[in-house]
Image (tube, rainbow, N blue to C red; front, side, top):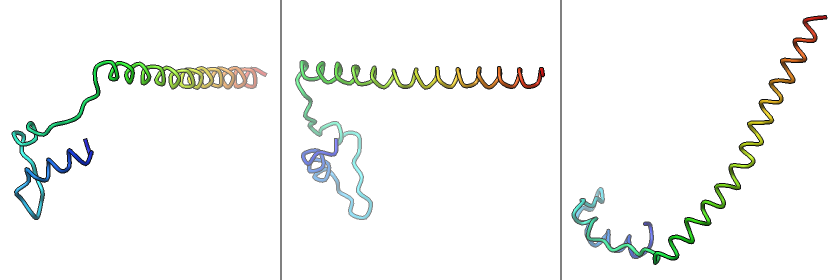
Length: 82
């Protein structure tokens, strides 16, 4: 949205000086460039792929915390039993 074309169109609709503002009707008339459908699908596929890569370390971190908690509990149990 903060492209030069968007800002230019927004400013042309603005009639206030001290506190710029744009109303819903003027906002709905602003043209926004959107990639063609194939490019949108490529972008979504790439984002999904990258999100999958983010999920792996998160799952490893959760497993590591669980293992650490279990190790601590076992160590405390052993120490208190002695």
